[in-house]
Image (cartoon, rainbow, N blue to C red; front, side, top):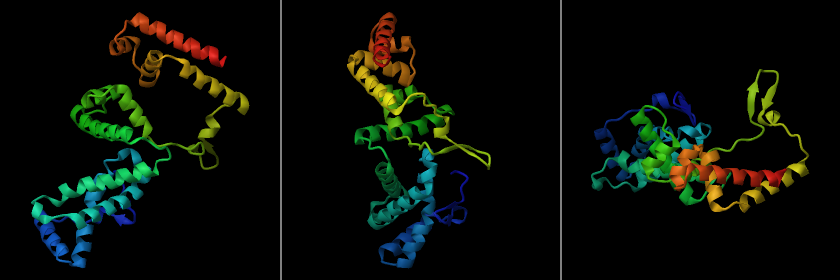
Length: 257
């Protein structure tokens, strides 16, 4: 989206750039009820909306929608802004624009995510931006967790929870004559009934594990930690981690064989 010029029919390369003094004068006219000044002020701040949309870099497919929603936040900010606060309008408007976009992304997500999980995810996204600038590379989940002073598994769960879902009909390759979709790359060697029963058995097997075994499997196979790293995090020896991991996997294997 960084290279995108047109968004919602607006040519962003031609958006006006006004100085702070000019914006302040326009705002005075807006508060005096000048509708033409209000329209001019909105257009003059569309770059502000665009800059906020660009923060949500992982949502390119929704950039047009986010821009429209961001404009709603901009208008709310204009209507509620108090010039006597001696505050820059952009400082006041950005949180409102971000809030509107976040609500849109939350409400349009096909999977409902709890508010606490969303809050962690958005803090993690902000931390990732800050650490990327600091390290000149994308930080790991563990580095983000340390920065936020949260468990790595909580950060990983939250980021996964707000990630975009994909459709089995989404194309992965197109040569002009034939389209290969995700569903075409998935093999199915079992009947639907067998697969459903296997999934039920797998869920029951995982539910039967004790909390420590579940935690170890999460750290090992979801977050990708080594047995030594898991040992340090849960406070037991590597040999105990290895034994508990093996027992958990054996339990799951017996349930689905």
